[in-house]
Amino acid sequence: MIVLWCILGVLAALLLICILRAALMKPTAAKATVFDTVPDARAHAYGEKLGALIRCETVSEMVQPDKSKFYAFHEELERQFPLVHQKMEKTVLDGSLLFSLPGGGKDLPPVLLMSHHDVVEAPGAWRHPPFSGEIADGRVWGRGTLDTKGSLFCILQAAEELLAGGWQPPYDFYIASACTEETLGTGAKATAAYLKEKGVRLGLLIDEGGMVLDAPLAGVTGLYALVGVLEKGYGDLRFTAAGNGGHSSMPAPGTPIPRLAAFVHQVETHDPFTPKMNATVREMLRRMAPNAGFGMRVIFGNLWLFSPLLAHLLPVVSPLAGAMVKTTIAFTTMQGSSGLNVVPERAYVTGNLRFIHHQGADESIARMTALAKRYGLETEVITKEYPCAVVSHDTSAFRLIERCAETCYPGVCVTPYAMTGGTDAKYYNGICDNCLRFAPLYCDGQQLESIHGRDENLYLAALPKGVDFYKSVLAGWPAEQK
Image (cartoon, rainbow, N blue to C red; front, side, top):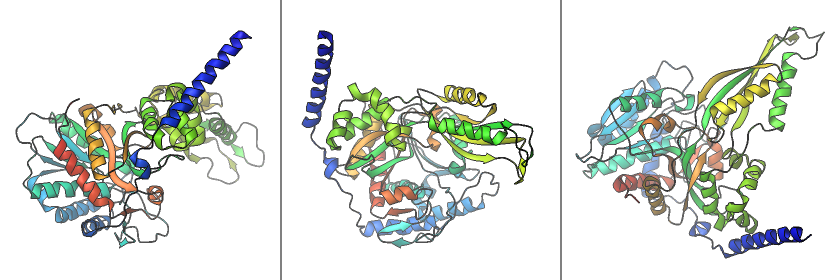
């Protein structure tokens, strides 16, 4: 009995400490910070230029030997950004772009800013035509405004304005833009290989990734700049069931489709992957804790105690948050018989996986293969890409991004972020240790949902912020070492 009372006393003391720590937290400036969406004359001028880029239809396809639409887009870039084309060397790699500007002779690590210019399809009825680049309601509308011609515009406009002022960087400077990002093509891979062949070792790379968002997690209020420092691996698996087939009027038990269905149901109802809190998510939650509700402050502010529990709760509470702490699988395609009255001899489903670092590509695939075998399924690996190296938030490169974002968005809370999707930055791991994924553009809830959806748009007022951010980064590099 004494032991029990001692245990209860310790638990009560720990709970009291957690409650006191939460009660003593003071909200940060981010809690009361609101993005001003009213555009000024500069924002309108930028919107007109971005609109011209949106009007160039650059939908990419899995097999696309004809790159003429991308070359037409390149011609529009030359019209909009003449100094970039006059003063920087342009290299075209099968439709993907690389601009380079030699530094002033100092032995400083180079910088690469990148954002792809291909886009996905734009089906359905839009409020404004998807390739119109129309300006309405303080926004520029169209496919690619957010993903990612908006950030590409800001990069090129920043370079254009700096070059107009006679800027000569003390380091080699590069701008890259692939035309195959949306189709997992070779554009960025070829560009990275080209730089590697020339012996380039980058000091900083900034690609698309996190953005500036309001309340990125339910229960957390305020304005946050999410800087991607962790990118998961990528995989596609095909699970195939074989059988005798036959006429549907005489179905036998254990045919391919029911076995596949049982397998999918098992995966959906009994997650085969293990959630685990990682340093990136832990730091993100720590920074958000002061602006969360009291109950969440108790947990987020005491991760030293609650991390193991929270790792298992996050996938239940939020699919987005859950994807930051574990490998995920989503079943995406399936095929059986081509006849309505034919039992197929073979049927398959495919699963798209995003591998977390603590349970990487090989272990995750082995788990799925073993599980599929229980249902008599064959597993085929279609694509396998390993998780990228994690960039620490305690580096001079991250702190530079942090300072620049705070300058452009006063009051914002800058936090490291675990990317649940993929970017072209993964191809540069071999030539850069500081691959950061952040588009410095404000994005509200509707806009976030419009990425790869309908009515994609971007606030005009976000464009000057994005341009100034990139100018600040280029002026501040190389960042002072800690």
